[in-house]
Amino acid sequence: MTTSTLLVLGGARSGKSRFAQMRAEAEDGALVYVATGQAFDTEMAERIDRHRADRGPRWRTVEAPLALAEAIAAEARPGQVVLVDCLTLWASNLMLGGHDIEAETERLAGAIRSARGPLILVSNEVGLGIVPENALARRFRDVAGRINQAVAGVVAEAVFVAAGLPLRLKG
Image (tube, rainbow, N blue to C red; front, side, top):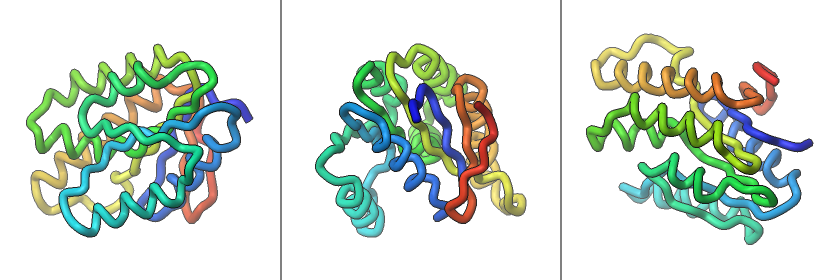
């Protein structure tokens, strides 16, 4: 199945990253993993190492904790599939760094629209649970939801994954 632009949404441990990786690996050409996570603690470092091992040697990793639009512009081209994992970690990085999230989201949407090759983006759907009790968590939920809406608006296809099962939302 040929992918142009795809957003894969789901909750924690829903199977969204596995689904996205399988879609990418079904494509011909080089594979590029754009990582937005940062190893600030041992648990995250172990998680990153485990994900790298799961991907295998066919993948090349590009670290882009903040400059996501630039990474997509540089990497998305014919003959190369780009997988971005994940937009919610990117949102956290923007928030913690005091960046203009609305402007960065617009830049991301522009990079997705201009992508010259297959592009898959993974994001957590964080708005399905209870309302968080603290202001920072509520702000994060709102930021993530707005980013997901913006990206869903510009991709050709969107899929929601729950319990490892994909549900087509768009495309």
